[in-house]
Image (cartoon, rainbow, N blue to C red):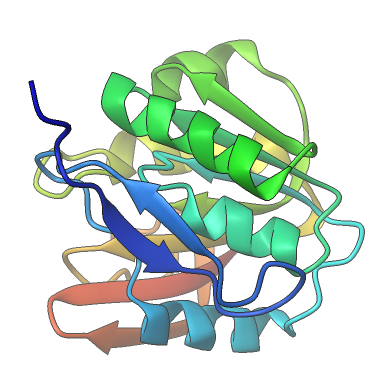
Length: 186
């Protein structure tokens, strides 16, 4: 039986700049585009030295690996899909990413059982499955003071009174059908 061809995505900057990570073909798996990642890390100030990051619905894990490449002290990558999880484990080994904690777990289960606090949470759940209303209310208790949440969605988020209740949208943009936001708790 022939191996299925794996897709690749490039890390933009830092220690692993230009390194490729591999990921499987899987329904709904869509890595954050390079241009979007560049913008997000510009928003975050490029250097994530000392920060603890959570990549929830990690998929390819590119956001968590990119954060580690840019100096994050740890990145916890949570993914329910077994093929995506296995690919992240292989990428962790390839990059020698000792500070990557790759977990095969449901996002809600992780949030309900893990009490760790993070400086930065990357949130890119599957589209059209109503994950944001379930997950956003749980994130504040997982953030350090002044912590931030990066959210990708198929629609724009609106601060406090809109669909981002309890959160202030401090930055937002759009690339094609992807709306991306930087949020802080209010």
